[in-house]
Length: 135
Image (cartoon, rainbow, N blue to C red):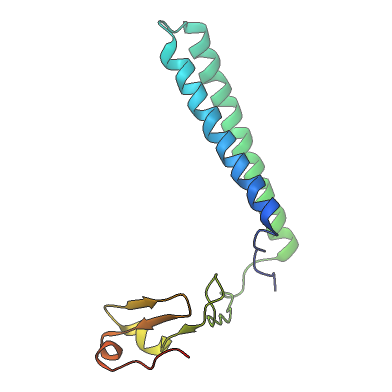
């Protein structure tokens, strides 16, 4: 069974991702700035833009389809939905999670009490009962 996608491997990896996102947004903003500064748009530039889009978008789509077909040929057809056991005992910061998951699956309202020490998910029935203090 394939493993879950790994988290970012450390602070340098996170910084690298942040730099890429910032550069991408700067590039996006820079191109819009260049477009807004132009007084007139030449027809040849618009034709090149449309022609390249008509060529590049199908090529990218074809690549994606071939990529997915290769995965299918390697792994075969899906026989059933993958069942994954999820144990949610700690949140992403390492705080312990307290919850009656069977009860909150059916609840129409869920209250989350979050402190520096723990995270507690409460259904309306739980909210009426006094909660033990964290040690």
